[in-house]
Image (cartoon, rainbow, N blue to C red):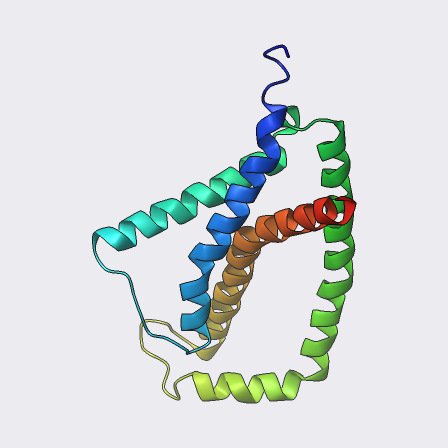
Length: 165
């Protein structure tokens, strides 16, 4: 085997490492989000955990973009996973939008319970506070999409590989 082909052997192994690393690192934050635990990492462990999470995310990004590491079979799996994620996004985003429109009154009522009655003086007028809230919400959506969409992609890649096995 020549040296230009050796990196193909490592692609699926790196996908598996990134998948399990991301999955394990996501357990505690999801349990905390669901209110099942309040455990927090402190000090060095927090730094190590965040470094591992960022490293895993960067590895996933690299694996998605690194076409030179894929052989023909892996490229076919990659393309099928990409087609599935496009279908998923094409279907899910309008459904989420429709749900937001249909349940707008309930969402607004819930948001009113979350917001304080008196707007702090440093925020400004109620309109400025609403703009700030919308911008903050949009940034959260972009952040979580950027973090979890690559993970969904490798899940779909692994699913395609499992189905072919």
